[in-house]
Image (cartoon, rainbow, N blue to C red):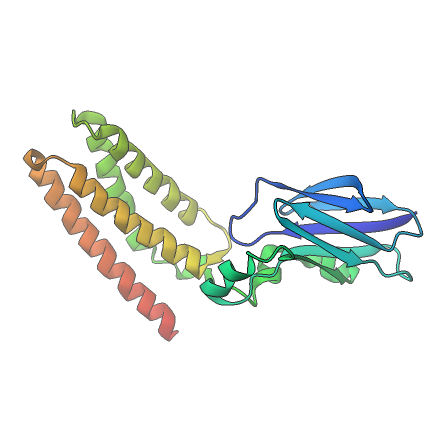
Length: 231
C-alpha cells in the first residue's frame, strides 16, 4: 500500500466549515477540512488523486518512487485583493504540492499564504482604539436593551456583533491578515454610523456621544493605517 499524508489550508476564513472530497479514480476515499492532517492508503499502482469542493476540482500526480508521500492542499490566491477574487473563479484554484516530511510538519496557514497576504502581528494592533470601539459598541448594546425604539433588535445585533469581533481580535495570539483587519475596522465604522442613524432624534445625547466616539475611532484608525504603511 502507498501512504499519502494530507494537509489542507484555506485562506482567510473561507470554507473553514466545509469538507474537501478526496478521490482515487472515481472512488470517494476521504474527506478533509481546513487545518486537518489526514493519512490515506492507496494501492501501490496508484498514480494520482483528485479532489472536489463545489465547482473546484483538481488532480495531482503522485511520485512513484516515494513512500510515504506528503501533500499540501491550498488555494492559489495570487497577490492583492483583485487577484484573490479573480483566481478563485478558476475551478483549479485548489492546488496540491508534494513536500518533504519536515515542510509538511511545520506547514500552517501563515507559511502557506505568507507570500500572498500581508500579515499584521497582534503586537502592532492599536488596542487603545479597539477599546474605544468596544466602548462605543457597548453603549449601543445597552441602549438597545433599555430603550423602546422599534430598531432595538438591529441595534442589539450591531452592538453585540462588534463586541464579539473586537474580542476575537484582542484575544488573538498570533497575527491576522492586514486586509482582514482593515475590512473589519471599516465594517465597524459602518456599523457605528448605522447605529447613530437608527437611534431616535429624541435621544440626541446618545447620538452625539456615539458620533464623537465614532469620529475619534475612525480618525485614529486612519492614522494607525498610515503608520503601518510607513513601517
